Length: 385
Image (cartoon, rainbow, N blue to C red; front, side, top):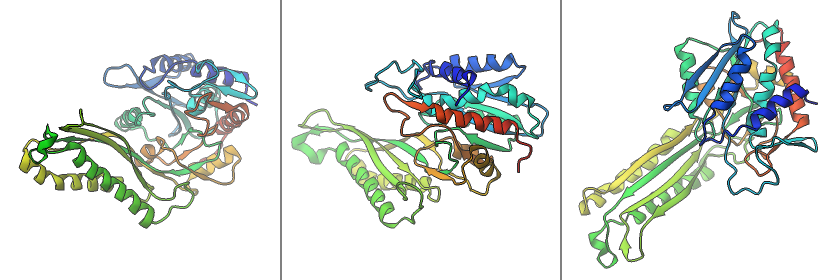
C-alpha cells in the first residue's frame, strides 16, 4: 500500500484545478517550494504570457547525468460529465483515489516528489531529474519548450520514464496524433445562380472524401504493427462547419481532421497528400473567383513513439515494476518528443487509461503502492546501462 506521505502529496496535487485552459502555476510553485526546502533549485520555462510553466529539477547535482521522471501537470475538463463527487475532492474510498488527474497523471508526480529526499540521499551513480510540463492534453506544447531549454543548457539526460497510466507495465510504443484545421473560402451567391459561385462546403467535402479514402487505404494496404488495438494508421474528420442558409451558396466552410500514425508510418507525408489534393482543386475555383482557395492550420503534432525492449531504460522499468513483459499503448504521450531529442524513453506509470478522462476518474491504491515501490527501487539502483 502507498505511504501516507506519498498519498497526501498526490491528493494535494489533485485538489489543484489545472485544467488546460487554466494556469498551472499553483502546482508548479508548490513543487518548486517543496524542493527548495530540500536545497533543490528548479528551472522554470514559461508559455508566452507566463501563465503556465514547466519545471525541471535535478536531484543529485554533480553526478554525471540523470534519469528523467516525466509528467504533465494539466488535466482535461469535466464539464458535462456525470460525476458523483467533486472532481477536485481527491477522495479516497474503497481502495481508490478519485479526482480529475488522479490517474492522468498527478498521482505519479506526487509519488515522485514525495521521494525527493530519497533521491538526494541515493548512492545511485545517476541523478534523478523531475520534468513536469504544461499543456500536454492540448498538444504537448509545454514539453517542447522544456526540451529546448535542456538542449540550450547542455543538459544531457541518460534516459526518461514517462509516468502515464500503463498499469505499471512498461510501454515501448504508441501512435502519433496529428490534428489539422482546413478552412475553405468560396464565393457566395443566390442558390439559383450556382454557376456564378464557388460552394465552400462542396469543395471541403471533396477533401473530406480524400481523408476518408486515405483511411480506407491504411486499413487495406498498410503493413500491420501487431500489438496495437488498431494495428494500422487511422484518419478521421472530427468537426465540420459551414453555410448560413439553404438558399445561399456557402462562402465559408471549415473542418478538422486527424491522423494517428503507426511508429513505422510518415504523418508528414499524409498531411502533404491532403494539402496537395486541395491545391489541385484551386485552379477551377479561382477561375470563378480569384480569392477562393484552401488554408490549413496545425492544431497539434504529437509524434509517435517507438522504444525497444532491449533499451536499458526499458529493462530498468521492468526490474523496478516487477513486470517481465512490455506493452504498447493506444494513447499519445510526450515520449516521442523525448525520444526524438535523443533520450532513450519508456512509458510506465500507475493506473489505467480506461479510468482517465472519465467521470469519477480514479487510480487504485494498489497501483500507487506499486509506483511507490518503483520509486524506492530507483533510489537504490546501483547501476544503469
